Length: 309
Image (cartoon, rainbow, N blue to C red):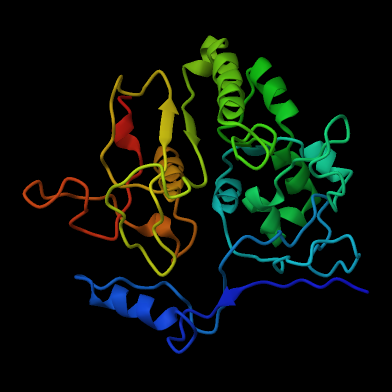
């Protein structure tokens, strides 16, 4: 029997859809009102589903092999920071732990196995793997998506690209289902130590260390409504660089898109699209009201307050 793609989606532009009305009403009640950012007639994925492409660029959504994961999102041409970097000739790579193993095990039949055949590559963690314009272009795909083995070679050769995205595998990502936090710390420490051992590379590098979620338990504090989909719970972000301010803790409001805003600011790049969150302004504050809630909400910072260049 064939296996077909599926998903849990919401047309959040239609307030009659389940759960949509109360959220849209809340955003509309704020001062100023916040745009839900839901395009009419479009459906938005509500949880994690496998990307529309396998690592070799073949279509995963239309693959009916019984070993294929049924919950797979269709391919998308939605833009990412990768498109912006390509269009502006800024070098970049996405280094993904166990990518090479995944290329020979696209259905991940060995996921979770211990030993040489282990496959703990995280396909849902590689945003570029969802994109048609990245994955179906063999030259782009093979040049810009690689394994972390190549990361260590590039560091050793002092030839890191301008922008690097690094994702550990499930064995060392700190996720309690497959890893431990000290293993993630070791993964990060190895990268930091190797970059610091190359003075020329270290003097031009900032390493941003963060996670995808905090389980809701990381920290309490102000969470800013940005659109229909968030923001979410607070999470840690640590920046390691010779240009950071020693001991400085930023109270500027940010989220994951702040890293993209930093890239755009640093290389004077345009935003990803007309409706992406990197269009939001940097926050301004009224100390008499709050040092955490932006007066120009919704707004997210670009992380430049962490540095003294």
